[in-house]
Length: 139
Length: 137
Image 1 (cartoon, rainbow over the protein chains, first blue to last red):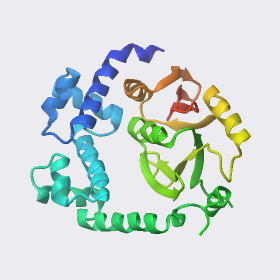
Image 2: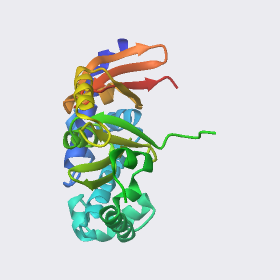
Image 3: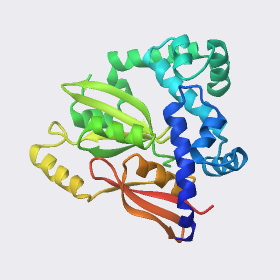
Image 4: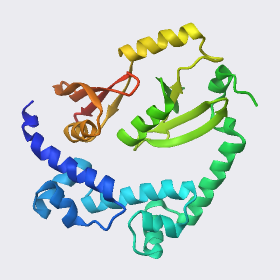
């Protein structure tokens, strides 16, 4: 296919995307990320956004927040989580989390804790009855 | 009137391996991971931008639902690549193809132009195959 002549270009952008996926917890910035793709920053941002619908910086924030949700759900404190997803301060982390998730990290964590406890104490609440019955899972 | 799909099933041969494939390779999110006793597990994942569609990674194992013969038959058919389970769409198929390939996903068909857009085919860790499509806008 004619578009596939651009394979090398795609591989470079994907390499930068995977760099964010793998190193979001480190102090990475646009310079580190664009270096992975061997593009000028301007060209890189334009290509990245055309492929992923987000600038590299917005994508980095998204990945950090997605992983923060996983860590908070596992019970890590807000401070621990903020460090583990690459933030210098829990305050700036909490502000960003609220902006993206629409609730504070603590409120999100509380909600997840309630769900986790419910799964442990009454997992059938989360399984449609038709599946539970066929599996022989009964209350 | 039916309005939408909330749950669907993909039959898998190993839930730990399926978890790794769907979450760490495809980027799906875990919705529910509940132990159901005696080694059983209710595991559902959602596509990254479709949080209300739970895909159940259903273990093919002998029990109330499947007898031994059925398990053997299904295992053989799944491994053989008999079942096409779904069509997944993406924003950019070439980037998605390169990313999944870099993560070790096996493709049966590389991206190819079709009348509706572009399509590639890949298989999961059990042997189920999927279409990966970029639909013309």
